[in-house]
Amino acid sequence: MVSKISEGVEISVETFYQADYSNPQNSEYMFAYRITIENQNNFTVKLLRRQWYIFDSNGEHREVEGEGVVGVQPVLKPGEHYQYVSGCNLRTEMGRMHGTYQMENENSKTVFSVNIPSFEMIAPSKMN
Image (tube, rainbow, N blue to C red; front, side, top):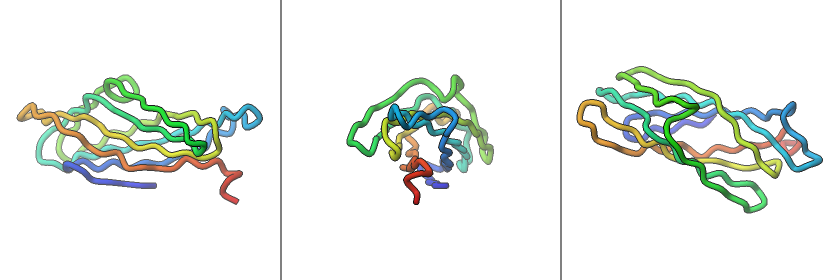
């Protein structure tokens, strides 16, 4: 698990290889990741948008952005956390992701960015 605190919001990430949804013969590797977002500020925050940077070990990369996460824009009061699971497909056995969440201070309506720490996705066959 990797964690990072920025702008008073802690982001923790765990990754899982999804063997049942992968097909190595066709260079298809599926990974799931669990994100925990914890508001350590003394004000309520709302997650507005996300932007991901995804890198395969073959040098390919792509960007994904959009509103909220998994179809919602969670609101977190001070001390609250929100957890969700999503997935990423790669063309190689290894890759990494990092990104940002755009959040809003619900008191001042100020928008700010929270860094999502870089994390690796590695198929078990590469860990030997």
